[in-house]
Length: 460
Ligand SMILES: Cc1ncc(COP(=O)(O)O)c(C=O)c1O
Image: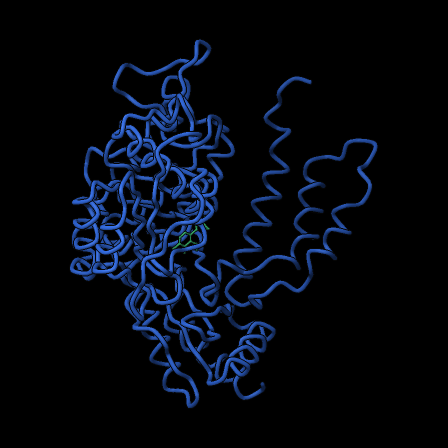
């Protein structure tokens, strides 16, 4: 069948109308989904039709059936896990990414999207105060960004002891010791599994989850051989930042590679407000962050940054006869990430940064943290609520007394649907955890959310 642009028109018009309906409903609809995955799997999973269906009908059916199973993640009252919403420019740019359908691997083949990612990468380095010569890759998320940064580190620490991991693999290689803080995020453990490095040795942390530099020094003193140290900028429950300069200096004195997992917390580096807690951040070797969290671009979009371009390119570069490679010394998009073929996921980052400008990015990050502080103080004023962490960034962890009571209130709150906050365990206690990551959360959302918690406490 010949390509006919009109074949797209009706389906895209329907999608545009459905998108407007969805976005229009987000501010007022219950945050939680009302159907289960099992119920929807039955509806979506009917026998595959024998004959074609026109695209607009498919879109109508898709949207109408999915609607009760959608979480209003874009709501200003969604505070679950660490999940951002979507800025308008980022969403529209994401539509263009799908429309253009560029396989963003080679600069020569897809110059526009490669250039957009290079520009977005340079803006990120500037905003985050990281070395201008670093390489920036756009990954699926924080987990893969951690994996990519640690892959660069793994190759480099082995190279320093004369072992080429690309050539010889890990079998028979010098043992790499990985040190991570006691409250390391599970995604780092997963990344280490991908890399064949096993579980890290845990370094004790303080009561906010920050790695203790004295303990890091003690652990390093016992190790002979290649070392990777994983620091954290933004602990999941407290938002706390590891003491960067001190830990990095100790690690570097011991020839370790330092990777920083800053899935959401790295964004604090855009504002002078966190300059002292993040002092020394730029002296690490690699960093991971998520644009789909704090920057509020659509899923999926993580970012890996590596100070020494040779280290990341050596981990991921592929050279073959059938691909078209850039001039010596230049990197292709696929030299910086685990995949060869992928969507141009850095383009929505460019659009988000272009629309916010420097002041907008700072306002976004400072605004999230201000809302976290407002929520914490509103909730702490309710009798029976204890805020367990120092609210230093976007994260708040609460207890309602006993673990049982905390779990009851959490379940009631989620069932009520006015907000979404998720439960967890932290420092040996059940907690209700709040992450303020949505650009659109405002004072009215904060007030409504405090009232929703008060209501859940009354009715549970
Ligand atoms: C500190 C930290 N690191 C890594 C991740 C993993 O990121 P992703 O879910 O994008 O893979 C998260 C996710 O919440 C996180 O909070």
